[in-house]
Image (cartoon, rainbow, N blue to C red; front, side, top):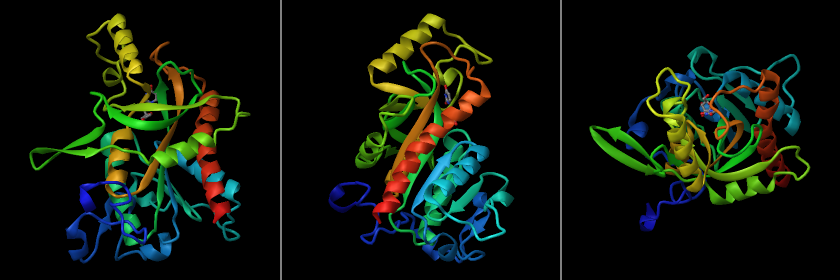
Length: 310
Ligand code: R2B
Ligand code: URA
């Protein structure tokens, strides 16, 4: 990085296009984005994706299909008559992808490996499509720490289960660390878009990213458990005292890989429960479904405001 200062700005080209920090890609005849069912030679990626500005990701294909329909309504995007939204990656049988004007809505599955594979391919997609200054959002669910179900959380920082703020990946038998950083301005702007009239709380803080939903998040209701309820509560209180407000399973690679690519990114999650009160997700489906729209609304406000200011 210039001056050894690895900021998101330094990681991209001056014209805003995504810099691929991999010299091998340019030398390849074609680049197959296998898990997206797309390729740099089989598809005209500039024509298909060149106008993308926002990449929104969330765990499940259903939620991201709903988000695609929701954002279409919100930004007043019209599909050509007689057409419906198409899952561009349907033949990957891995992730779903919908395009609504400048917005991509993509599912990332559960956990670090799944979102990491997706991010590699989406960052390459941005490069091949010559997209300028894209903004990435993860719209997700999480467990709250001292926050009741239905609370919206904007992540200020990401930490792993050992409270490290970097993504540690074994490469060629060595551990490589990449800083997991969000765009501070984007986080501030998102927080400011919370409406005092919203019938729920929007807050922010540190997000813990774990590699497991059960023992990895200190639950006592997995198939195994070798600690007591008291041990669990002591741990949850301890991480709360260190500023952790929610736990999920993708924040570290999401923050680290977007930062490494010079892409502005933020995470907005809704809590499905307060982990200080229990482990089981018990909210009825209809309630949980309504909660899951809340992060979508905040991100939609950001996108709409951006498009109006253009
Ligand atoms: C939130 O919810 C999922 C686990 O249920 C995981 O993908 C996450 O981060
Ligand atoms: N997702 C998580 O990873 N943890 C929770 O407790 C709820 C949703």
